[in-house]
Image (cartoon, rainbow, N blue to C red; front, side, top):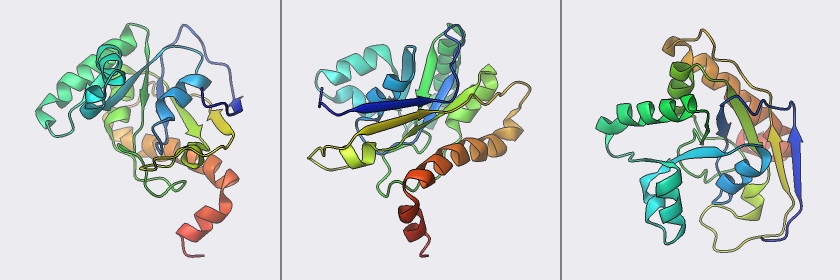
Length: 197
């Protein structure tokens, strides 16, 4: 709709009969449609409950996707159960484990545990997605869009078979490294600057 060229890179072709937990970096309001563009199946997203209050879009989000009330920790188990049931019904999930839009892209914020708890409990593979250039197209909090080609990279699935919740840290580091290495490849200077080098 905003007339920018889109380049999709897929390291492997995913099975359409398999449900996955897609993990992406989060820098822009464009991230949900961007992730859906590179994934060749319907994805149900986990998003903060405030998204459901946006006119028109909010109605769609509330009725199709799964909302998260981050201020109500008592509902965490309900969220996990609903997410696992969605995966078992054959749908894939899309989750941005940074939790909110990154204000200092492309350098990643820390990843939260929720996506990994869901993937391990459901024993579903995780697929890292690097949304390379959305932070250039529509930066967080910016009222303006900029013309920049959109690059999306779908990485190979990471199995959770046989893993337990004790493996969350290792799995989280592995998926974060995949996305981070892709971003470093495209924006090496920004990563050097972030480390004061």
